[in-house]
Length: 125
Image (tube, rainbow, N blue to C red; front, side):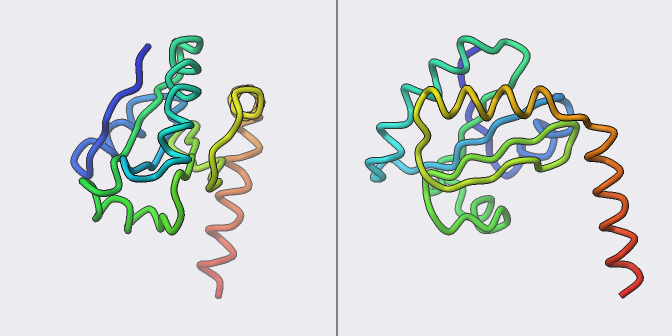
């Protein structure tokens, strides 16, 4: 599957309707972003069950702000609607594969339990 461009309008439904979504926040003037693009595209071709989305931070400034993007490229990974990875900087192909594998292997019952516990703690404050 090739990468898909997402916008403020399609971000939520992309996360909601797919089990695993990686999101690359980038800009055309960003040289690390440009160098990371072929690596990200290659990974998208290898992992059919994963959505590889791209957000052009210049065209989607509101979405970048809502996602608290302060450095690009920034890669985020969502699994079952939960943000499970976020890191600025371009990854090598090997490191990207490690992240993809780690996200696929997450025990999501454990992740959802941790999210629920954190929500309870915040509600109690």
